[in-house]
Length: 424
Image (tube, rainbow, N blue to C red):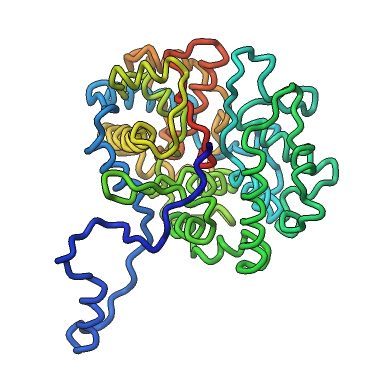
């Protein structure tokens, strides 16, 4: 069964003993007694995803990181990303992504990431796997979702409208089944759960945010972390949390990729303007762990590796699943830090290059993708003249695209782990 129930918000996110004083109560007491002086400015928002990922890594038993391979991969990834001029600028260039830069695109992106989960198929025959036929092509995986949404809009179905989602007479399961009708006999996984996500999100948006996700963005006050927190607090179906070793761990795959897609689509401007975008981590799914393992960055215990290679399901919320996802987040953070250590110019390049036009697209297939898995950075012979910024978002996009490229070439070193869940 898919994972659905989020960890209740009422539980404290930090581990405390009964003898520990609550710091918030202590501060309130100090203020009451006049001992605090002038009230300090509120601390900037933090998602706490990264610190949770480090905690998972520190306590993982069956998933480990290879320091040497991670450093080597960091240099290779950096060189290939520079060669490809990897950035946000051509997010909209993909034929399926929306081209408008207005509130309709905000609605599209919210809907897209609201339903952006669980597209993998148990069919071994690729021709029988769930696929969306649109504009003369068959689309699978994430792109099947985008194609289905575009097709529905062209058919006059207001699939990106919250008022439609809450109308139980118009937005029925049969209508949703029509929206996601497959070019094969296999249906989209978790159809009922997708309907429930639409219902819940529509109810929250219509009753609390004036029927528009753009109002959520405005409430976040240009903070990516603030928007992630607002989304996960307001919508149960985005609250991707788990208790691991007596501690709350936030993974927030879809909430974070929602912010990242806004940032990429709008090139860091308008609805995509955030002053702390680098607080967003990698998006913990099943493709990035697969790619990190292929690079030699992640290592699995023999029982876990055998389980994955045997295509056996891993239970949502299990220790294995949390270790795979949490350690992957931390591994990408280490890759980012290694790149910044060796090439400190990337820290400012992202800001100065926001209005430049790169050569390639986020969401495309990287040239020389096979070189990533070859390992040595020497494969990239020439350092580029221009430096493009790098953060965890762009590294994630690059690794995902590369893994999909390798999959199409039937060059996967290990299958992805199989967990049926709404979280990714």
